[in-house]
Length: 172
Image (cartoon, rainbow, N blue to C red):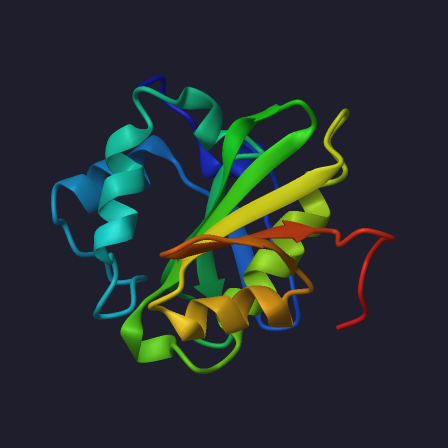
């Protein structure tokens, strides 16, 4: 990985969260199971470890339109991550997210997903953000619905969502 500082790109700020870009130091700490004082006690989750392990193959994920750590502004703790699987294809980019168990149920995932989806649409050539969710995870389905995504297809095990829905943004 090429050294990258999360300070290169300013965080996205929501009412309760700061979404700051991962740095290589963050990824190294996650991969090394080196707990940090500024992490929630149950961070990182398995999904965070997977993403951290893929930065070497996907260096664009460390950029402004890549993956971000979700920081709870009140405590200053990292409580999850949200990311865009950059680069986009034909104007569409996929979004993923995860919040640690100790902070679920507070609306953080929807807040982070909405903020990053809105931000993604500011990138040249991006017109749609998509996300996939396992139907066995109704809480994750609700996250996307609350964030303003609309279901566009449903398979046997998975639903796909898009943002903005046809006709533009939905109100929160």
